[in-house]
Image (cartoon, rainbow, N blue to C red):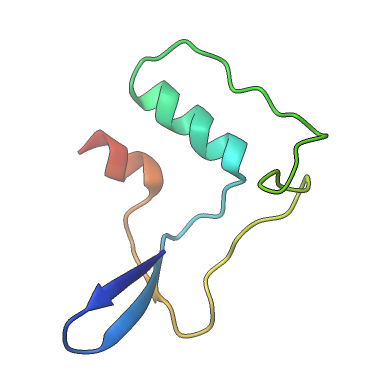
Length: 74
């Protein structure tokens, strides 16, 4: 994630874990006691992720210590 910092311009921020997009959805729904199911379409178009691919932070990114589940619990 990129956030704009008034002093330093744009700063890359990432968490300590790597998730696929469908996993993020499942964790979010679970944290909110939402019983909906995340469905993955392997034939998805432009915004579909290739199985196993992940968006990871660039070198020099600020890595947060808080996990995604901890963030959602707050």
